[in-house]
Length: 370
Ligand code: NAP
Image 1 (cartoon, rainbow, N blue to C red):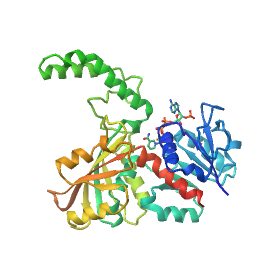
Image 2 (cartoon, protein in one colour):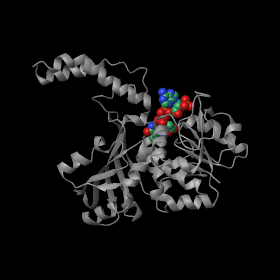
Image 3 (cartoon, rainbow, N blue to C red):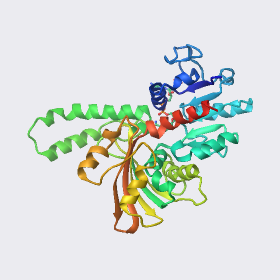
Image 4 (cartoon, rainbow, N blue to C red):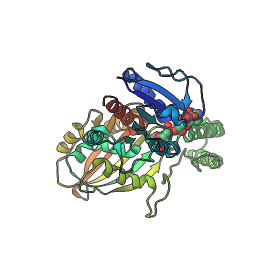
């Protein structure tokens, strides 16, 4: 019998990308769907196959949630915090699939990235695990791009510098960046056609950026013409929480006896929805670049090994080239001056697709066949 799946948070950024992917793959044919809201009660549900009810239901109404076989939440931590334990306390036995980080490090949950940890997912389902949580975006994108090396147990440690897009900070931050572009263009457009020296234009542009009022924004400083070397809240060891997740979540997903140290600096940049990452990797053994390229390329169907040339890097290894696709290019692969076991690489991935929605779509497909 077809399962009934409830969707909460489906109109947010992650949720709407998830819906697009479910539609594109005709997944809605395989289950009945019910849609929930925290703000638009009784408005129309999205138009998909096998709708249980034509109108949106209350996402906080446990009586509506309890009959569901699977709940997929892209609503955020606050919602999970309020609803998940209440449902469990009421004896709900369904599967909980979640984009938020609230349950990720919980012992009873599995962080899902099936091209990496399908065995753990299947073992978890067999042993009664009910919570399947999407990983942090940079973690999922790193694991998919370096999957060939992780799988072969070739990595001793990774130092990573991220270049994370503004969509990771939420829809409002994306809008704020677009407004900054419009504001500063309006402010300096008359200078652009003048024949003034370039440093005069630079001064005017910088002055314009510095007058943008960000006091009401989530990101409290302009991102245009800028970057932010800090993402998320501080930990007590000097890391940010985003940097802490890089190590904690990766090791949880890999589930190995040997802990792999991963650390670095996470940086917000003004790209829209692709995260990029520069890796310094200490290998366990001295493999040739050819062997490394072959291991990386054969790990999964989405990774693309890019030649270490200017032409290929600027054509294929950029956020603009990758945005809206499931491709995960990895390039700038070279041995470093530090020694034969030191490797550099650079990867790019759409953080709303493989970084958020796609692992959820795939676990949903696994669960509906249980
Ligand atoms: P979001 O875009 O802010 O959407 C969350 C909810 O806000 C929506 O489901 C909707 O709920 C409500 N909302 C209010 N005004 C809206 C509007 N104008 N348009 C759309 N929705 C509106 O959140 P998100 O970025 O998708 O993130 C959801 C969860 O996924 C978070 O826990 C986040 O940490 C996690 N995550 C995000 C990313 C990312 O790249 N953004 C990546 C990985 C994980 P109602 O319909 O109930 O009002």
